[in-house]
Image (tube, rainbow, N blue to C red; front, side, top):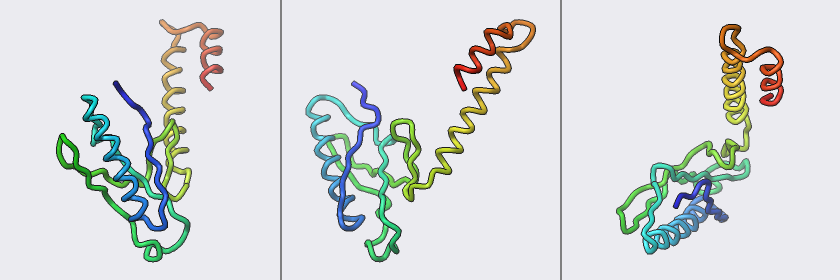
Length: 137
């Protein structure tokens, strides 16, 4: 069984409260997985913390990692400034520069690959290449 893009959402007055709620939820999920003979990959587990534009001191600083223990051992889930969720790269300050950069690079790579399809020796004829180009763009 494989779960992709699972999310635990928690909300608290301070980062530390929210992180503790997320840790408890994650521990419950890890327990359920263990009881059913499954386990999560800790290397793929990340958390992100959002806050309004207040000073970090007023909201008790940023939590950098959440320590967890389950039947398979102890490990930490690291804090990330950017996460990839449902095809979108979300920045902890809701800035979209990283998402736009990644998407632009993917588009550039796809268009470069189209030049290989359109080569004159063994590539597609112009009409089919044009159709593929427009459907990808």
